[in-house]
Image (cartoon, rainbow, N blue to C red; front, side):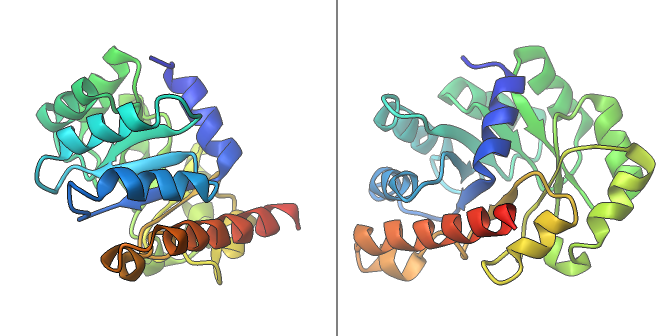
Length: 217
């Protein structure tokens, strides 16, 4: 398994984490492949759905011959983290800061990205050993909040998630984000319902294009 530092570098290089939530088990593999073909390497399958570990394992097997990075999101506690890691998750993302989850990931060499909103939560996460910080929900506080988080901590890696869109992604990168996470803005649920993987791929590619444009300015 790839070490946490390498996973961090690959996520930062790509700049995008696609959040796959609530996708039926029989569609998760073709959806994940289409999004990856659209240019997204980091795929986060949320652990709040049914049979999430099985979904992670299935996507990991399907994309084993690619440069995709398969991880888990909405991981609220250490037992859930262990379950998704056993299924093959290479990174673990949480909406909250759970110290035991971060420490478990550290022990197993898995990248941890706990959710933070305040400088206090950010310090707690970093002291526990977090590799990156997930600013969530980013839409509530806006891009300027990244500076508030980095102020007391210095040059810390922040990935805003929640409300990031092609229209505002440039603002988040300008504010210091190292990557962004996105669900509905990159995962085309209407296209999934229509079983239109071409459109799923195109929506993902359009988001990737917006990120690349924002980072090149």
